[in-house]
Image 1 (cartoon, one colour):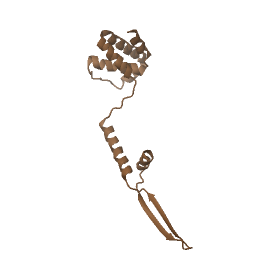
Image 2: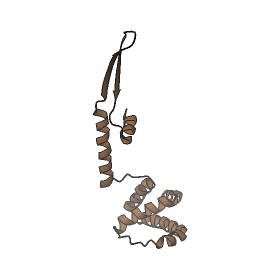
Image 3: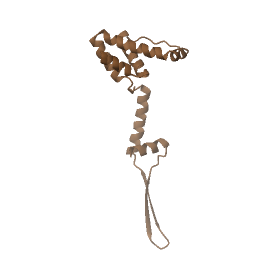
Image 4: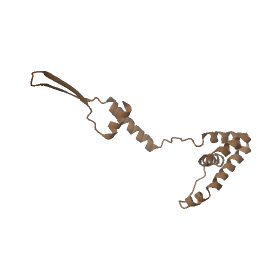
Length: 146
């Protein structure tokens, strides 16, 4: 238990509050959080007390049982790590970028063969390949992918 208390004391403010919120949601169930925008100043004024209370919540919960101790330990290990939440908007955006990337990859570039004879009678042939897609996104995607 002393090791757990040491781990909790080493967490920074955001990590300890995140962990306490996670533990509270599991132990007490999802409680609807009703906050008013005017409360932000009150929260900021008492951040030290909130941080200390979050530490008390974690320690007290860990002392309840072995099951809770394991749960708090897992939450502490994952707190502060950034999780990617795939919202529907993000999924649609990623799908759109994927379609554009596939379009750029599989689109055949336009080619142009220019043949002419110069004044000395020498035949000159120039082959050019270029893309007809000049959008900024296509240009950026092409540089990233190729």
